[in-house]
Length: 231
Picture: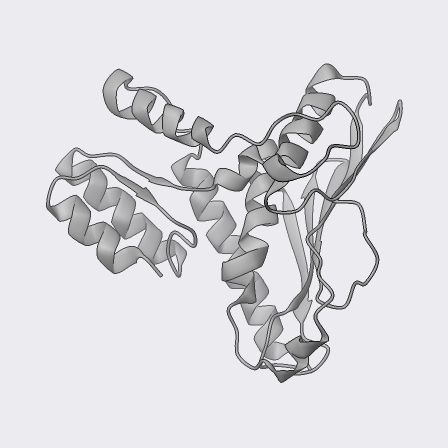
């Protein structure tokens, strides 16, 4: 985790773009934000996966309104790695699942309700390599799933609305280097740096808001407790 080094930089009057996970807990994150405010500097979470090609494409489709009122969005961040059976210990939620959780929170905000099924198929109570996290927004449900036992090329996103559905294929982490299955937005991690510049020099709004960071951490903390209690 990055809290120690982030606080050190802030104490020296430096603006910070902090890698994920931003902190281990909501409490730690609040301490960082409070310290930045006290010192008069900017600190923001580097949730650049909001600008992946697949996420930007889904966002654009939703914004057109062509799907109508959204009813369900399903996000998959899967691998096929049976060797995960040899891994014991928590940390996958904070290291991997944090990305798709942040993408949903960044797009739709704080959910009305959170339901977590987080565990391991191999090391119950001692790992968190499988997760099915449901975020509810009024009538809409966002399903965020991660597994290391998915061998087929499952879609990255499936979105259903009252007027239609949209399927976004997997492009992988280096989506800028992959061939596209049609008119797909480009991956552009530079957008977060453009925003950081605007926040520092023009008093713009953070594209990754403090409350969004705190909400993602609340979900991660809850999901981790569920994984610990899995039997």
